[in-house]
Amino acid sequence: MSKAPAQRPSDPRALQGFLQRARQVPSRAETRGRLLFAMDATASRQPSWDRACALHSRMFQRARGGDRPLIQLCHYRGFNEFHASPWLDDDRRLLQRMNAVQCLGGHTQLERLLRHCLAEHRRQPISAVVFIGDALEEDPDPLCQLAGELGLLGLPLLVFQEGRDPRVEDVFRQLARLSRGAYSRFDAHSADTLAGLLQAAHAFATGGTAGLERLDHPSARHLLEQLKPSCPD
Image 1 (cartoon, rainbow, N blue to C red):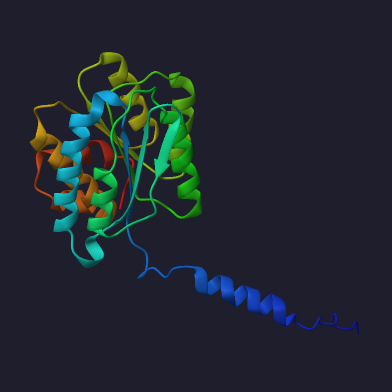
Image 2 (cartoon, rainbow, N blue to C red):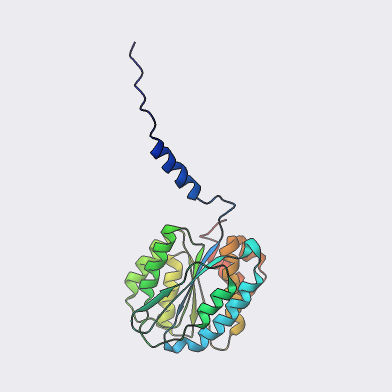
């Protein structure tokens, strides 16, 4: 009869390392929605930035307890400036950061932003990315490639375009579609539309498409029509 293979004594250090890693994995009850909120902060967008600060603060303050997502604020502006805040659930600190930003002239950096989104999502999953912008000076092909990678990883882009530039709209719609996200447009006079879109983004970050279904607002229905086929709950 062949002998059973000898068992190696367990390594206490390996066991301790495994237990430490297990403690660092959040339980399902501890996970919260995470919303990356990104804006073009080049010079033309100062009025919209000011409106978004006020509207976003109002939406954030309405959320309570577990319904409040963690939010990271990102923006690009000026010459090669890109900033990303820590993940925050404090509306006061978030508003302070947003109000401290002054828009500066410069080229768009959407590729840099999308790469940042990928890196953050790989570290810890993000529910959705909201991007607000009005211009694009970059090659669309790398952007579409990155948007497709986001879609494969389950990170949808909610792209909100200010204005009516048809070339920008074409690319923004492609980015939303490739990421399995959604696209919408607003203008300088449609504060209610932007408020509804931000409220819908919060609802999606915390409750997925079911959260959008519970929100009785035209903006929520508009996003839901685009998201539901690719984001089943």
